Length: 212
Image (cartoon, rainbow, N blue to C red; front, side, top):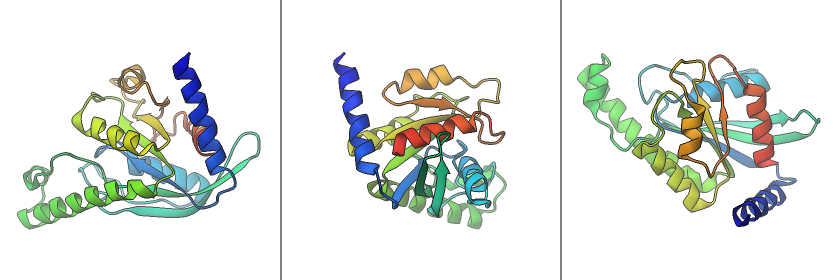
């Protein structure tokens, strides 16, 4: 009962805080290759008609903060939410240029990517201070109890930032939304496939509830 009262209080608090603002920033965070930019691309194509950035099977394709401003999200009941979408580099607790060598890069390129990826992680953490709300994109086929995921969630909790977790890649056989929900019961979890667009309308409604 007490937990329910606390959740209702914070829900009303954030809704009152966001009401009427047009400079909201929604960050997309998560570990490398969880599908952050794929999701950002889908959101931007659906609401702006253009993609956010390039995607790749090699980790840390996104190494700089990417922003699309003035996205206008409309709910089923006709209400509108205007915000900037911020796609961030994948958070990792370890970066080794040798991993990029294994992916087929030469040594010079591998070392450069490792350096850029490290800077990107630092920038992503710094940008948390500017976020009004965050979507944490997790690969639903992977173990959610990883050090990286716990680090991301811990940083968000420390800042009291509203969060929704997108359990991505539900089109794959090993995906488990329940496993993600069990790992982070303090946040709403919605299963999606950013690549296929599965459950994307429900995801948009969840964003509207998070930020309105």
